[in-house]
Amino acid sequence: MEMGANQYQYKWRGGFCLEVNALPNTIVIFGASGDLTGRKLLPALYGLSKRQLLHHRSKIIGCARTPMTDEKFRNYLFEKWFSSLPASESGEIQAFLERVYYQPGDYGDPLFYKTLAARLNELETDLNPEHSGRVYYLAVPPVLCTPVIRQMSTAGLLQENQDASPWRRVILEKPFGHDYESALELDRMLHQYLQERQIYRIDHYLGKETVQNIMIFRFANVIFEPVWNAKYIDSVQITAAESVGVEHRGGYFDHTGLLRDMFQNHILEMLSLVAMEKPENSDAESIRNEKLKLLKSIRPIQINDVVRGQYEDYRNEPGVQHDSDTETYAAMKIYIDNTRWNGVPFYLRSGKKLAEKRSSISIRFKPVSHSVFYPVREEDLAPNVLTLNVQPEEGLSLTIQAKHPGPKLCIGSLNMDFKYASILEPGESIPDSYERLLLDCMLGDQTLFIRSDTILEAWKLLMPILQSWKEKSENPLYPYPQGSWGPKEANLLPAEQKTIWLN
Ligand code: BG6
Image (tube, rainbow, N blue to C red):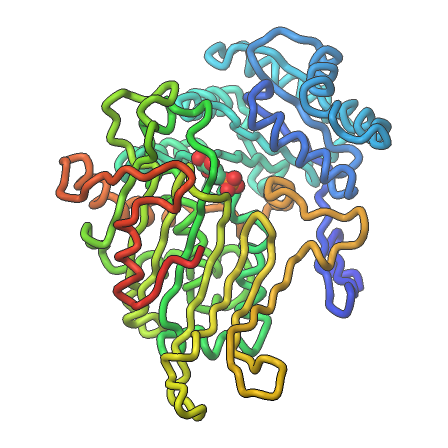
C-alpha cells in the first residue's frame, strides 16, 4: 500500500515493513581520508547503494587536505578500502565510486568553502532544490568542528529557505564535549549556526539491530510490558565489553577515559531505551522526550557504587602517560526513582581488554512467589533471564525452568536462543549501524540521534563521578589482568543482590 510520495507499507514474512526511500541528495564528508570514512562511512553508503536505498542521483563528495583529483581519490578508495570485496561486486563498486567526488582544501581557509560551494552547485544541477538537500558529515577531530561549522555558515553552506528547502543537515561524531560545561559550550556554538532539527549527533550503538529492536520488543508484544517493572524484575545488567585495548588511540583515550568514551553515550542510551516509559507514538520527539525523562529520574550515583579499573600494562601503551590514572574499565549500580523501577538495581559495566567482545542487556526476573515442587524451594529454581544480545551475535535468549526429559522429575534451566542471522535469506547480511543512521539522516528522521538536552543530562549524571576522580577520591583504581572480566572488586556490586555478572 502506498502511503505517501516515498513511503510504503508492505507485507513482509507475515509482518509488515515501512520503507521510506531517500530523495536525491549530496553527502559531503569532511575528513575523507580518515579511518572513519574508509572503515564505516563509505562502506555504509555503498551498502545503501547496493540495497537501492541511496537515490541514483545522489552524490558523495569527500573533502581533505591532500591535493587529489576525483579519479585519484576513487583509485585510492578502491585500493585501500574496496579491493578486498568479492570480485563479483567489481561492477557495483565501480558504479558506486563514480558517484564519489573529491574537493581538496584547508579547513582554515575561507576560499576552500567558497570553492566547495561552487563545486556543490555544479554537481547538483540535476537536483530539484525543493526536494533535495545536503548531509554534511564532520568526520574530523573535535577541535575542528567549531571552525568548520563557522566557516560553512559564513560561506552560506548551511543556509536553508524559510520552508527548510533545500535542507542542510550536519552529522557530528562524539565526543560531545569533555564535561558538562564544554558540552554546553559546544551546544551554544551549534545553535548559533544551526537549528536543532539540522543537528544529527550520532551514537552508532543506536543503529545496532538489537538496540533498534528494544522498542519493538517492548511495545509491539503483549507479553513483556506487563512484567517490565519492579514487581517482576529483580535487576538489570548492561554490558559493553571489548577484548581490544586502546589500539592506536592511546593519546585520545588517555585524555578521555572509559566513562566518557562509553557511558556518557552508548551505555546510557541503551539504558534509556530499556527503562523508559512507553512513548505516545514512534516519532522522534515522543521517543526522545521519554529518554530524557528517564535520565532525569536516575538517582544521583553514589561514588561507593562505582568501581573503576585499569588493565595491566595500559601505561605502556603508545600515547599513554606513564603515571596515567585513566580508567579503562568502569562498573556501577544505579537506581531509577520512579514507580516502574522502584528499588530495582541496574548494573552497568564496560571495559577494554576484557575476556571477550560482547555487548548485551540482561533482565533478571524475580523467583516465583511460591514453589509447588516440594521440597524444591522458590530460591532453588533459577530465575528467568532475558538477554538481548547486541553483539557480536545479534539476538535474544530467554532462560526458563523446564523438566528434563526422562522418568524422573528433574527441573533445570533451559535456554531458548534466537539469532537474527537465522532469519536472513541466503546472501543477506545485517547492515552496519552507519547504514541505518546515514539513511535516517537523509530522511530527516532524528529518532536514532541524540538530542541536545539528553547529552547535557547524561553529563550532569556523570559529573560528580568525574569530579571525584579528578580530586583523587577514595574510589580506588584497581588493576586487572588483560583478558579477564575486569577487577574482582566489581563483583561486589551484583553480589549484594545475590547475583553475579552474567558473562
Ligand atoms: C566507540 C568508542 O564509541 O565505540 C571506542 O570510542 C569503542 O573506544 C567503540 O571501541 C566500540 O564500538 P563497537 O561498535 O565496536 O562496540
